[in-house]
Length: 275
Figure (cartoon, rainbow, N blue to C red):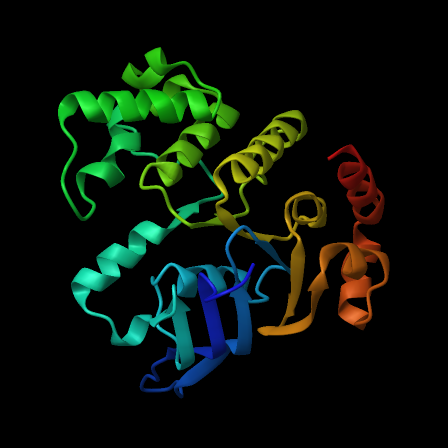
């Protein structure tokens, strides 16, 4: 994990404003306050915190869906604020996202094969032919544990866990260097959740992709992340190696989070010993 970070946030702040009205003054809310973090090749960064702590805002910043009010967001060493439209498209291929609800994130009118192939059709560079697309979709389906024959089905014909596998396959299609996992298992049953977590870890070991895992679920972050950042009211209050933070938290808010999930430390120890 040396060289230029894949993603770097430097003193980033995001302020949401609400314009005033005839009888209402203008207001603003500081969602993210001077956050700095970075993710290198092969690393997994977990970002934990309660609802409203700023986690999802960080995800939007990393994906280029939101511009910071202050500070800078760098992808592969390039500041997103200063790149051309063509460079933005190229950088977009480097980072992909897997969202919380696989059903709402997949177009119900499209067959699974078309959904997975979509990033390849609309990316930069030479467009693959029909045969190449079919082969690539089959390869990706096998990679996430689904039969290639299911490419002709629609999302509603799959279970929740299978739909999340399809979302992961779509994210992997353009061969990204980093994937943002925004609450990737919170909509799934416990048994299915474990299967998806094991799949994500095996894919990382096989492909060397980096992850940013954003979750309120400390156990999910414990299983995947090598480094954890704890967010509270828009700020990172504690960061460090996941094992060290979970075993001996220093900040009062981190201790509060761990106390609210009694299984977190035990789960962390069990999953790391099994790995």
